[in-house]
Image (cartoon, rainbow over all chains, first blue to last red; front, side):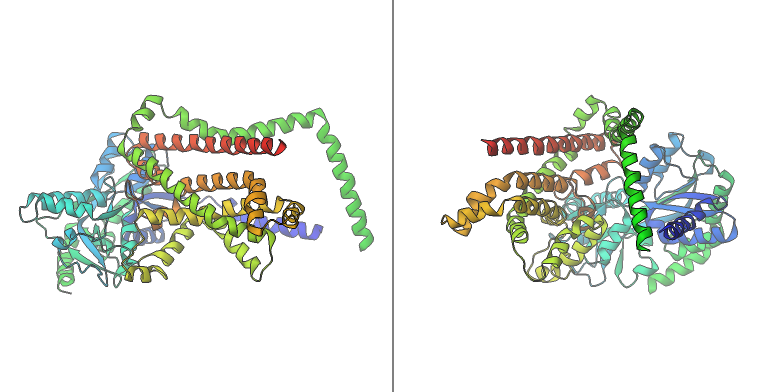
Length: 278
Length: 287
């Protein structure tokens, strides 16, 4: 009996030992869920080149903003629009001088690969009975989608009626853009408003992207900033610098984001034109 | 070996007797009181904080917001419907499992309890794989033009899935508690099986059935994970109170707090109702 007790104690100690091991320096990054793929890869690069490890919290940006406002700790916030970043800036949660736009993005319509509702263009979204997924109005993806619909409504070719028919086809307002993409990939709905970057490498073959013409589209600025409460402001800045570096920008571009650094953009335009013909 | 074990066993008994004696001492009582106080405080603090952090006027103002009204109406109506279905389907099942043996009963019992243990996210994805448009059953329904995901029906299905064990377990226990001799007496006096069930067993077990139904109702009201994954999030159609709280957390914290307070009050009502009902049933039984 006692022998077993000692054994159990040892096992417990072994389980706890990582907790007692040398204190690991962790950079906590709150990141919009749609950036999961790209930022994980940049995070891996960061961990390889520094002695910091990274902990990500991937969620809808408004949810993380509420968490920060309620006192959650983070070093870096990666947002999918300026609205939430600006709000946190004005509330004093962000070190304002660190904020920069690291990538841009556009709205895209995504449909399941077998396209059950046979959606080939914007007009098809207004056909009664089409099941459409959108973000909540507070979610960047939902906010941008509403802006696109407003632009379409302003064009007599579509008009206000178009916007209303599309909105009446919305069956769910999702709280992360990832949930829109995965539900489309499962074929549960017919179309979803997401970003051009949301057809990530693992989603190719499951969802198809239908692009929104530039005259209706919104170019979304994606900002990143260091929080004023950060215990590792320098390390956090290094993470931002990595995102802005040509390596970071190349990763973002690979995931479909529009890079912001000029040198990369030249390469990017070649890449995206190739994607357009493909 | 056996003697050593016997000695150890004996020593254990002596130790526990000593412990018992010590427990009865005043110091132990004080310690126990403190422990109970801390435990209750730990549970009560978050609930009290909800009320502390939300001034009455903002709660009342949020009470008229369409999001709150829609969520409240949807939650109460879907939970009522799913509870009704759970009671209708669950009562015969609980009775059969309480009284009879049949092949595969163990498996049936485990299957019934599964949703209690299952993490909500697993329940959500499982429902999607079954009833979703590409699901095992859903694809056939879809071919017939019936689509469940993103409808109020999906909310009800999710609620039935997660809440049915709460009723069935309680109902089964209540049926098991009915003295078999009473049942046999009714049968020997010429009552049919159905008559005995309706007029003898059901009234005696009523107390437990009602509290089981109330527990299932409460669980349905609180259902979140499976709903957001399977039914989606649309105000007035699938956005129940927990989903509205989650959504409002991202924009309108006051509305979220208002809904949270309503749910807490409902939870309290549920507890009081279960206790009051069971007391009344006991009194009736006494008369």
